[in-house]
Length: 264
Image (cartoon, rainbow, N blue to C red; front, side):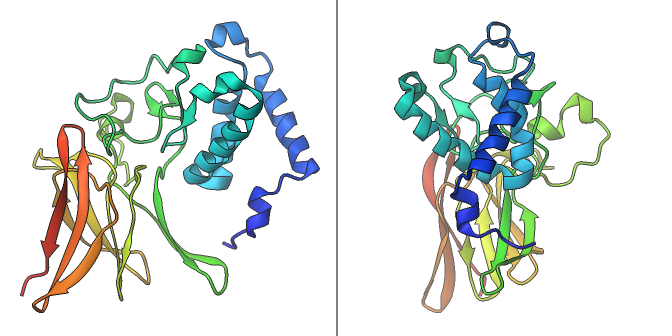
């Protein structure tokens, strides 16, 4: 897969603007602002989201909506009460009259913020995310050739998806999950923690710190953490032993530094 040049992702040509305007008009047809519970642009944007995610990925949708919201806020002051969150959804719409999906299942108590969000965003159908997984990925790019070498879903499938009644009996592969995380690259590994809680087979709640082969993306190891990662990992050596330290927190779990070391 070849990566588009940077200008192709940021430069809005008249042709591209024309396509966007036609898409918005087409998606907005038949949508009544009074019935939708909010301004006409919001249901149109939600219906366009899966198409944009296919082309840009979840992170690209977040960046695109964030930039568009910042520009629009200059001309439309009432938009300044909204913002784009880490899942690419717009927060602050309640004040503008846009209600959340009433069919979405409630999030587990005590898991708000700090890596506690469930997976896939808040635009749902019967409580399931509208955007298909993966919801988060780690991507290795060959900068010399401008090509993607490998991509992997990062983050265990969230409980609200794994345990959904509509998916009973379905073997769901790892979906990845969004979160503000950083990676650590060593000579042979890429190390990153997960950005949200999930329930392990032994019923513990927590997240995993995962290590991937730097050349292939294959997972080569994982360590349990009591809370999701909230800061980039770092590594150092002391008295001939190697240590790895990262920040974790989420829900009712207070922020702390977690230190691991290799066995002798």
